[in-house]
Length: 395
Image 1 (cartoon, one colour):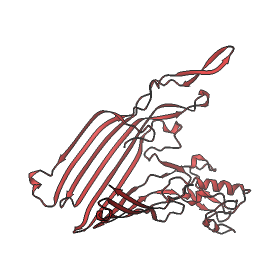
Image 2 (tube, rainbow, N blue to C red):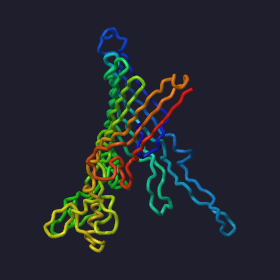
Image 3 (cartoon, one colour):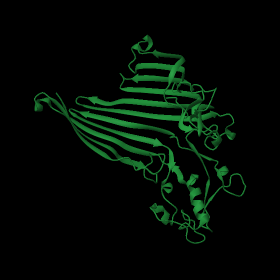
Image 4 (cartoon, one colour):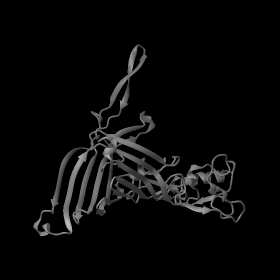
């Protein structure tokens, strides 16, 4: 929708927009063609802003403290003065083509978009001496959201009482921080990287298990001989590379069967972040059984400790903040299956009725090691497997 994670979601006030669409279905040069039955090319460009900034938000304001001192009720500040406060700006560009073939038995929509957001509305962190944790203001950064979206509908078979229709969609979406003046000296220097996506984590680079000490090791990026936040230079992007779905619908007389597959290509945290230090009390993934025990071992997990081995404890918490706990979390999920039957009206004295059976989240195909690959943060249970029986009457 072009909105940035920095600002409110509602868009308002189109300052200028141009758009065009051409419909080719009636043009003489393809009017009698049997292959192309529909054609449309559309494009648009516009600039929008956010109106959810409130009234007089640039002013410093005060309220009664409600506290009496020497017989006088005092005032306390509630907002800091910001003369440069204004709307967020979004510039949107879209180009798409729609085409139908063989009397629309095959229908394709392919679109490309690019949205650039600037002057993002954020709560800018403030020094504690101001008495305010943050101040609402505009961030002098530019973020680009772009992508390609494709949908395809096909009527695979349609004859007599039987029909089979397929719908497929896929989206490839990217966002990127294009510019951020003085990022290196700002409070966001450890959160964002120019040229990278917004939904990233800067982490340590995991270099494996020390076979002599049995402790996890990490790369000292700046070469100062110690591991610190300055060594978190590996950028991991948690935005999906692509996602989409495939659904099919079969109908035969009064029966109808629908099912949908959902697929996502992405990285995520694995099961290692859901457990405590191996050797301490608590639930642990079964993988910790393969751990270091004697010098020369190259097992996957480090030495057990009850919490008294300082280097091992520190290494394990650094492991949480490294690329060692991030891996492929792509999956294909049988999201929905529904079977329904329309009861003949004569059975119900003219009333119509439909009986349905539906299942959700039935199967997941993935190599991900964890509870569920869909969530980008750990600690969540997988989506519930739900079965529903329905009976619908229409009078």
